Amino acid sequence: MKLVIVGNGITGLSAAREVRKRLPSAKIQMISSEHIYPFSRTALMYVYMGHVDLQATECYARDFYAKNRIDLVFGRAERADTKAKRVHLEGGTSLEYDALLIAAGSVPAKYGWPGQDLQGVQGMYSLQDLTAIQNASERGIRRAVIVGGGLIGIELAEMFHSRRTPVSMLVRETSYASHILPPEESDLVNREILRHGIDLMLSTNLKEIRGKAGKAAAVVTDQDLQIDCDFVGLTAGVTPLSDFATASNASCARGILVNDRFETSVPQVFAAGDCAQFLEPDGTPGRVEQLWYTGRIQGTLAGAVIADSLRGKAITECYRPDVFFNSAKFFTIEYQTYGSVPADAESVLFMDHANNRSIRIAYNRNTKCVAGFVLMGIRYRQEVCQRWIRENKTIEYVLDHLREANFDPEFSLRYESAVKAVYRKSQ
Image 1: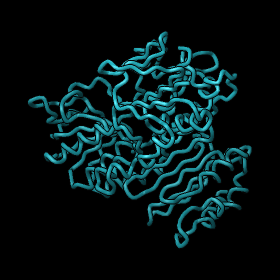
Image 2: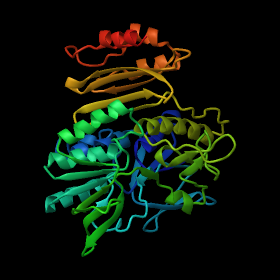
Image 3: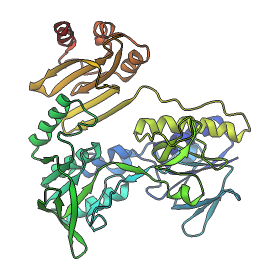
Image 4: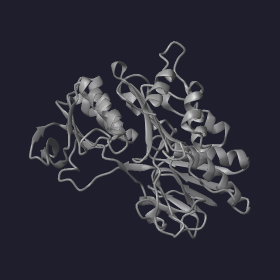
């Protein structure tokens, strides 16, 4: 039984591990044109900043793959002949498969800006992106302009800040990340960005990128302000990478269309992770999930589904998203979120302005059940917060047991009493 996986990120790697557990004799081949060894994409910024080298970001020791008989293939997969069940690679070689998993990930989104293909204009997603940024920095960057206010954008700003490169950030929203953060938390991040000397330009869109001799030389905003620069980082989101799937005749919309068992429109071809787009019950294209942890969960479950398929068993497992979770870092402020904070929900909000910390617990005003957490500069235990949301615990219960969620070091400040005091005052 032969499994070929296109992509060796966290989704492809998790699927390979699960198939190996369930099918000890299966042949597993994992293809990547980025780096032969799977690595943590979220750690690339720390390679640039000199905190770690690339090998330190690799998911396992290099002998793990030989020990577990996972063959790593370095090359670019161009298309699959789904009738002959062969994956064709650039250069003319091909791999035979009984099941194929597409876990190709994403690429930085582009929106047709004039000049977006100039040299010195790029995203920050792949190892090749990192190499290009390192090379540009070594040549010297007078000013970098970052387009977009997402999590990758602020990572890129911190990277340049670490080398004292002047940075301007163009953010279309009126406040940083206001599409994902409540107003108070968004304002806290605004202040943190400005505190680090970043030129944060809110309510500002990119109009065009101007070049000189084929290289980026300036950006022009929608207010006709020209900013001279020699590097432009495009961080206004990512888009699923579906070129391979399209060339293989799998149905795609925004991403590769799959059902809740990761099956594409082509028999024995599956897709998972950033590149997959789930079909709604009525057959219309639905959500795309593009987070590290959802990629890991999807990869593990896709591996289980593929193992059953290869054994000829009925596929009974299907993907059901768990309580939402995400984490990031805004320069020195750690950020965690669990569940959701609906606009019509009540919230208990505690803010420690002196230390740039805040705790928000959202709950339903009618049932009093907790719906979500937003934490800035404070860490709570994921398993505890998700369990409280899953079990519909009330705000009173959560406040009485808040100490169970605390994950900060022993001598850190504790805020349980202060959060309860805020709630009591609101009542």
